[in-house]
Length: 420
Image 1 (cartoon, rainbow, N blue to C red):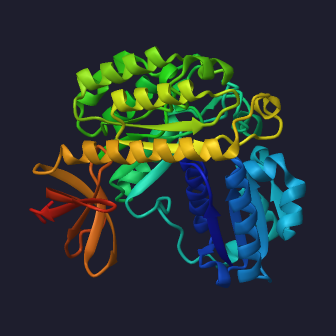
Image 2 (image 1 turned 60 degrees about the horizontal axis):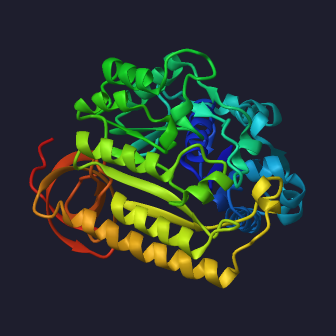
């Protein structure tokens, strides 16, 4: 039985599909392209109106590519608006987030003959080629005014530390060079159980596994504890911090129900930079939240400039049904939202180039991921710089490269060793 797995949106969605892939392959399913699949599973996203539109579009495309396949829609969009999912592509199954963890069992029950075709079970999960996304937490208790994810995912729930450590160990034993710890709000890890917090979990992973690299996904700035920075003395922990800002205006942050001021955010950035001067700090920014004035927008520009972000993801405000922000007055005119977004994106691109330029002339380790064409490989440094270099057989290896210049889409490097 052939299955095609696809995912939209966050790293958490990707992690969930990787876990499903491992379970299905262990039970005899074969991964395949969509047009050859007997079963297709799409993990949908609903964080913005654009994400919901892409989910509908993907469902229609997958249905067209494989009209005879059993199409399964799951994820946040399927959880929140199953009627829209049904109307978009008439999937054979709609599985909300509450049953997503049972997807493998549901498919095994629906197609009971698959296990009989098993020739040899895998000893370890089928992780992606270079990096494994390991889910450590789900749900969120923050209830930001614009966010639908806490509705779709429910309250914060931490996965048992023993299981997380075991998954990381399996990924390392399978040859993966980097693990990304992901969830909806990983900074809240342990708060629901009163057990180990995120720092404790990272410490266990460092002590009990041999994975060469550990990277964190997004951490809310008010959740980050400064004492955790001591953990970065271990070079396996990537100096990359994704801290969602959303706005540089305290007035907007209050309307967003974000428990962090602009000053608090900058103090955290400065603390990280004092401890780790070369760290990459990346962020998310929402533009045009209801009531946002030109002065609020200018405050966000000023804060971004001062923070010196290595990358900024800029999103025009998207009212999501069921959230407080969807019924707020003082909507910002659409053309003004687009102008502000373009201005912030231009600033983000300039800041990213300034940050990357600092490393030209240095030699840095790169985890080489893929060779799209002509022997040109791309990979990531520990601080999330995308490097391109000519090479042969670099895939899934961490090798040093001399960073020699800048080009569109990344940094040009020269591999200086192939013996690691």
